[in-house]
Length: 204
Image (cartoon, rainbow, N blue to C red; front, side, top):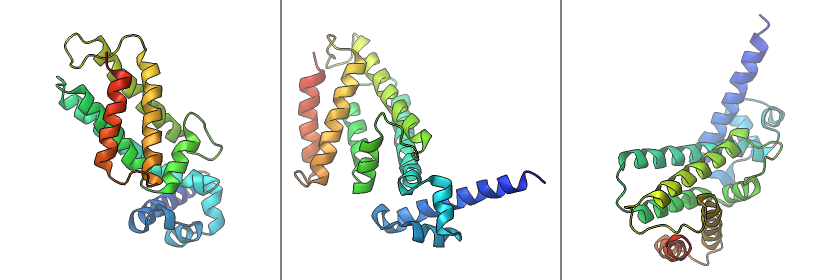
């Protein structure tokens, strides 16, 4: 009997989150409001905030879904390509994939920038953990590339993979800002620019 209120609370939280996911998918993240979520979930508006703190806290869970899907896809591709023939192309694919996610809306880009390396009070803890896992996965990829004697083109050896990850993150953020500010509207053009930056920064 004592567990029923807790179970109801968990069920309500899940219903609110699912409503946010559904509305985000159908309307776009910019059109999602607390009122719309409360109506969709069949709860009071205050219930939305009691479970997630604020809209950023709730929307960080929606973005988390997208980041986790991106990370899972990257890992599947790398497992499928045990013998990587073009590490540079694979790296650019990962970078453009993340840029596609974080430029889907101004809100997502802001949440991403707000939470890189920082845990906001209401942000999903798993959100930051997923960002850290993506960084670690990229560092592992660069470590394998750097230590390989066969992968072409060879990676520079005067910088650690961790240092290189920091640089790649900066390139991705810059690319995302170029897209959202319409300094570049063509993603193919952005990928070509990223390729030039990455080649100059990473290659021996």
